[in-house]
Length: 156
Image 1 (spheres, rainbow, N blue to C red):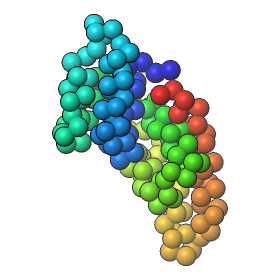
Image 2: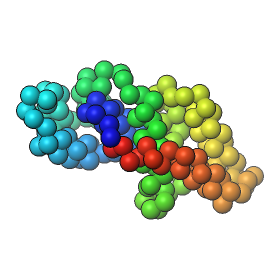
Image 3: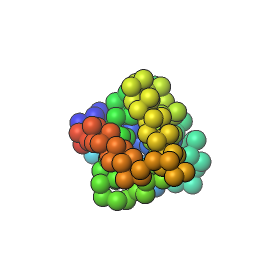
């Protein structure tokens, strides 16, 4: 299980790439506030709780004040694990999945191996869309890649 800063990093990153929407982040913050002792609650959490009408960039900025730039590597893997679950439940279509993965690769300074794999899968997907590849094979490869991180999705 991640600590508060680690979870904030996941929601910050997920919001930044479009995986989470502001209401989902506010819901998580509200539940977190209820679970924590008042002395453990950073002021930024209260601000996020009241952010349902704020811009995404403002909410991301508040969350980044909690994380202070830490947990980037773990947050990326957690997002990949959550994407795996969403893919398996068919909550996200393949085009949106590839877009989210691409944004993730470029949003943060993630591990080179993950960055390279995502870019390769993106290229394979684009080739398949253009009729120069097997879409079923690409979907299978994306699923296999995401499922490497499935256990990280349990950390949130």
